[in-house]
Image (cartoon, rainbow, N blue to C red; front, top):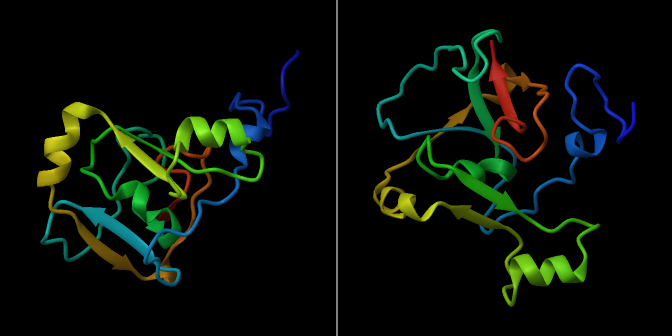
Length: 152
């Protein structure tokens, strides 16, 4: 069987897709914390729930760390992409994706979502980190969920 090595033969993802350099700090980033983002302003108690995308997994309360929080500053179902240069990014790719900007990361959405993003009221709920553990995922890094933390 040819192709790049995989860390889990059942997953089918190349090892290089599963290990990424961390996201760069974002403007105004504060110390490490875990966050849950929601459009619901009245969340008081977080109850574990089963993921619609992976119903075979146990119910969890999802949270994301401070460094990856900007990937979730969008309405829940908004399709988005987030990119940032890493040590292996070439000057040509930096120019292609970042042009003349000095930004350290870029977030993109579909144009049809712009009005919904502008109108969205998003609430950040800080989670107690001592109750969470890292959730390992078979998805390639960079997709929502790879930086997620779950509480059973």
